[in-house]
Image (cartoon, rainbow, N blue to C red; front, side, top):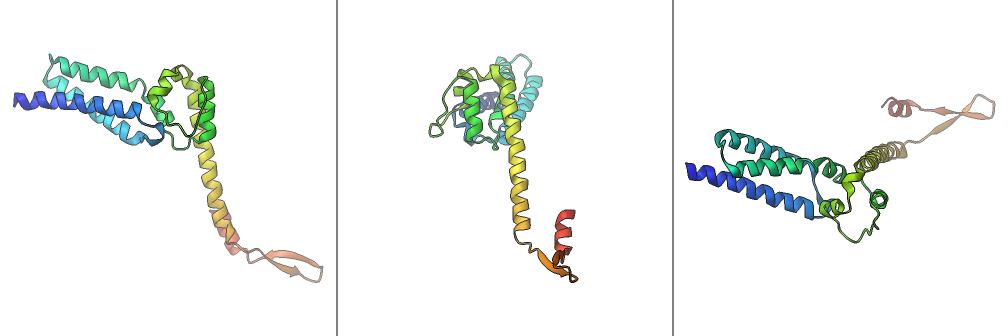
Length: 178
């Protein structure tokens, strides 16, 4: 039983360190913030439980330290793993850290940290927030184009005035209500 507990502690530490390496060195474009957040929270919970069971275990303390240290860069990862970021946003981010952006060259969280992006966190958050808002607007606009693209506007003559009015407005009114 003691051996299983020790194995669990070491395995959790190894898995977390492996994940950290993967998350910080692989391409930012492939990061899934939901998976990362879930794994970090699960590891944090496991470390807490292991700490209660093994109060003197230095490996558990190391695991807790690793989790706490990684949580310090989580806000950066949350901003940079934003799927709404497009090439123009990446150019802006690279401009604020004083580097050139090449869309053909993959880059990682580690690369950006080495460019001192943490000191520009407010600007990165602004860019990411704007990208999310732009994405929402683009999505809404696409839906409007799709919804309104099939609507036919029927003009019917108005009395004998030579002018026309919009007729058959039921479909149009339903879309406007939505």
